[in-house]
Image 1 (tube, rainbow, N blue to C red):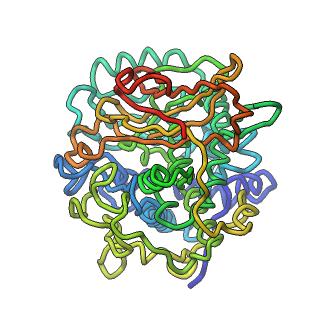
Image 2 (cartoon, rainbow, N blue to C red):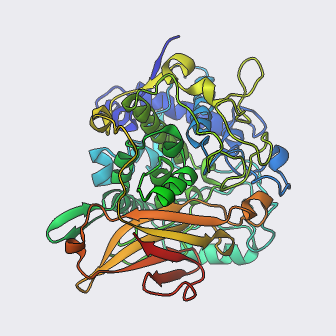
Image 3 (cartoon, rainbow, N blue to C red):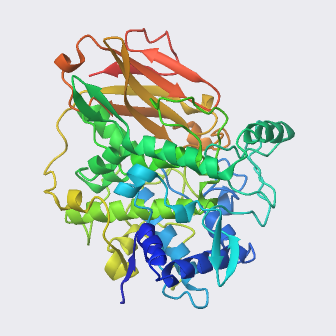
Length: 513
């Protein structure tokens, strides 16, 4: 099997600027073409982008037994399901005449370029010149060629999108389902009329998420998404590495702060979609609600696939670091290994069934008509025919792997957050008040849906948890610090201090241990 190489999109940009225009032009040509295919075409971007969430299809349409979309979040299939998702999108790009060699590039989120300038310009520039004609940049957004209808939320709010709607990113809002939503969104977006300035605001926000840190006693302490990507490479087994539910359970029982791959992944979704970085010293932008920030519509923004390509690359780096390129296992019957965990089962899966390496990953089928399984995508080179070019974190992955789970580590541990009371994705942030200064210790981004009330199994798994590490800070570093947890939603901000009683803030409980 010939092995194609997925490269950093910045490399394609550099080639283009140095005169080798064909790789980036072919990528743009392929993306333009799949976006223009009829929505019922299996290769169309509308069809592929819509597999993640809306428009709900199959058993997910109108059935409260399923969360709605096909994507797997909060369970052990998160890395493998999205791996096959990218593969299918890549095959669609390669089906376009003249684009047979196109590979899906990754947005190298931990590269020096991203840490200093934000999102690569190929994903944000307004236009692109293709075959001598200036066209709308195919990677910047997607204009819906068919309506999607929210069959879950009714009118409070209705997360429908009409034909002709164009996806948006931070700092804009994309809620347009009801007359009230459209009026609020129009007023909000009118405050940000300049596209170039909006891109600058977006990039500054992404940089803040990727690079935030605090200084305690003269020591810089990372509290950022870049560090989370580094830390997740030390997860001791696939189950804990794969998803937030399993890692949260392990951390709660063992007092550790293991970071799963899904955690930094969630943060980038919310950074691009609609939340400014916690602790960022500037005015927040309430009302931002971009499509990447909600599970229902994230897959319909092209940047989703470049983000997930990097997430899949980190998955492959973890496999190489731990000697798991040919096999890994799912811990039987552990939290995070059941179809109802976190978001509820997806179409094609039986509610309340255990996930294994042989669980079908609908809607993706192999040539023989059977569904892909995790077993079919363990080794990306020998089974799927692609690999990754050089990029960030290569040196981290080459370092010696941890032999066992991380030792017990002090953390602010948050539990008891009821997602039923929260509309959409939200943030759990921990702060320490040290000598009159409020220091941001870290944030867990919860990528959710606008309403979990339409999913029966989601209703049984409503608690959100977080373990936000203290980054090696000692008692002497923090002195008599007072800790505070902030839960920030699209509607309001909730505060709780560990000194308060459990009854003081019923939405969540916190502890430091």
